[in-house]
Image (cartoon, rainbow, N blue to C red; front, side, top):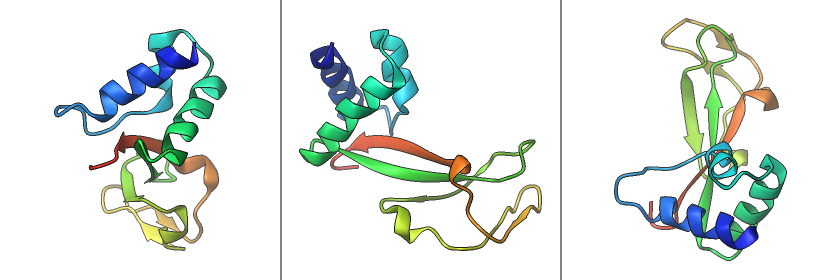
Length: 106
């Protein structure tokens, strides 16, 4: 099953049309668990085949707009304000960080 996950991930990562993808897409396509999918994706990141980015969403559950996207989680600022709903965030809560995968050259 790991081979199928790798194949799907690399196809999406190297697509000229797809900017990036979430692990849930690969898990659904391969009928595997999120945990198994993330393990293979992390192997691909470690091998330098794909990149993992971190997407911060607004903490207002009625908004959830993207506030920032960084390559390294340490690059997230400590405070954010949502331009759409006005939500002020004095700290970044981990449950609002989504891992997003892209091709190595994107």
